Length: 503
Image (cartoon, rainbow, N blue to C red; front, side, top):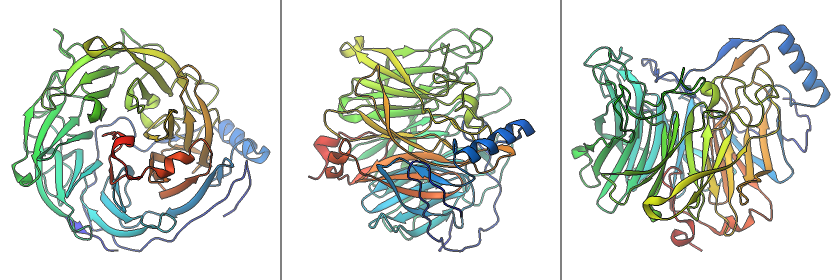
């Protein structure tokens, strides 16, 4: 592990630009971090036709889409800060929060920001530890980092190594962050098929970690099919070096070689075959979890965190290609699932794809106990069409905590950030947005907001290419959320905002 210390403005619905200079540093040499090739992992570099490029230039000229790198937003959103990438030049990924700090994952490691003044975040530490996609969570003095790239060993000095070699390593890394300026790598746990994402279930003495991974292969010694469940790790807070795998619950039992999940094509053309889960969100106050598992969405009981049990399983073989992430509403009677059509590497926010694919699916939870069911109500997708060079698809977001309303802020890669209301499950509507124009016009490029989360009065976005953005929402519908102050937030570990916050 290595610590690294540190336009043009045109209006479209009140567009403004803002930027802040970053610290200069030299990234030390390390092997590239190449993760399981799917949602968001591999930057798209596909050439587009001259006709598509010309159409984009025409749309910019007419004001239908913003210009290259131009910032536009709705009247109720202000762009208050941007901190560009610094020493870690890889793909920016997920975010976590604790007190006055934000923790930003990056395929090359992670970065810690002091956000006590959200209008001027300061870099506290940058840690070089390649291991895509470096999905990140924090709990107390511990930081958790996912490695879903086959590496030579579990150190931060490892290099890429084929998954066909038995000695290769993928899994969870654990850091001590009691000193935010000097994080210390304290433990590692190898997991089957690595750790694409993870979700923590914190308890007083232990932290349980649900590890999501997928895409087994008979040629991979440590990632054998069927891979039809998740890995559960138990981490003792006072002795993280004793962390260990305690269970691998099978979520998709079946007699076939890949278990009982969605078979994908050719049975269900255009749908991912389920060979594990992509991401899980837990709601500990309700003993519930929702899993976005490639070709399936699931609801499960986590009253015993070591032994989660599936309550219901749903599929959408018409409009969903890849179940990517899940978000509960506060009352735990709805789940928003996202579909990452095109694997985070395609332009899907256009008229050709339409409003139901690469979108959110809103499901009501009906019934009680083990008889609860996920019932589909509607789709939501941003209606601002993007250029054919812009990767745009539903991605990570969080609840905006307002009693009596179901409000959410969400990332859409180059589609930017959307604030939307799903209080009426059947009639969701957007109430605000922020986005940048295309990064390029001649090829499809992966960029834009990976994660957009509401934390203590502001929206924080980790832009894949542009760095950390901070937004302020000024809207009577969202204003009550400003009174909710969290000590810690991992969005995939949803809090009970109205029992746990400081008023």
